[in-house]
Image 1 (tube, one colour):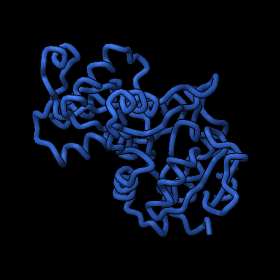
Image 2 (tube, rainbow, N blue to C red; image 1 turned 90 degrees about the vertical axis):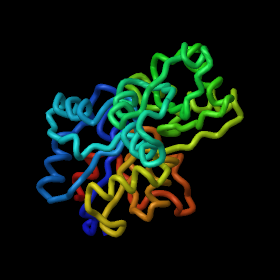
Image 3 (cartoon, rainbow, N blue to C red; image 1 turned 45 degrees about the horizontal axis):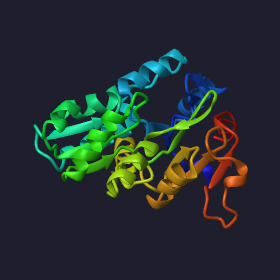
Length: 265
């Protein structure tokens, strides 16, 4: 059945690399996709970087992927909100440059902590991963949410894999603010359907001939299944063999890593 798959949606962190370390066989994997004429897009819940920056990262690993084949949760979030809010809408952001740039490119106006402290109530509080988040930044986000700003999260990943182990992710910041405000955020990234719809559109694929390749059961695999896609789990990131459910509700295929996947494509 794997031979029926003509399109892949590829997660990045934990699948293609860990931090700044590429997975073994990365170049061979992409060579295999192109040789087999398998189309692909990269879809990541990471909102810290732009598609162009990811293109540069892949180039450092010796792989060429244009920005048009990369969907970040920052871009998905900005596109989703742009459909609902007018240009010039004020947004308070807890995030890194990728999220700021995605929102600014769609004509949102980003306000700062001091403006919120002085009484401005933005329409939106948008939260993604931020390695430099401190109490004042989060406190003003909570204040804005208390005053009525809509609470939006780029993704729910509570951790992300690094070279030294699991680190807190965007979901951990969302949990902090949800606890402080008793408000549940709208989540745009996986496992929600928005990123999957955008990826399918870019691929020109269907649910019948497209599969998701990821390392997380609760986002990549669950989201793919909910979207009607086949799901391929690799064990090179978050999920370990003992985490896989025994009731058949998990992925359609399981591989140790992308090198093992490439062998059967």
